[in-house]
Image (cartoon, rainbow, N blue to C red; front, side):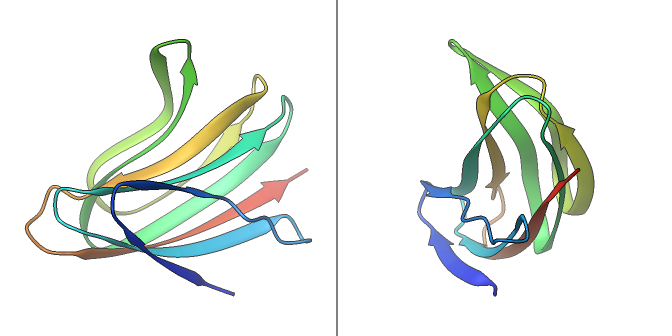
Length: 114
């Protein structure tokens, strides 16, 4: 099931399915961002992928105090994939920023793996 969200620079919680997956589609307005976040525990691993119909700045991040850490970062990307190996209990976020002048559609899938 693909959920659809129009991003107005807001945070959306990941809703995990019983099989450990989650899917979402975002409409990201010009100059705005979509941020999809979840709490993960040390030792978990999440495979992620996304594609979009326009170049978006993308990152996976978490915060340590006032500092943001970026396990993945891509500028002006229309697709990317990777794995996040969780080193510490944290809230992790997948984030797309639209620096273009048109609304962009981003589709993403997350899968917890053993």
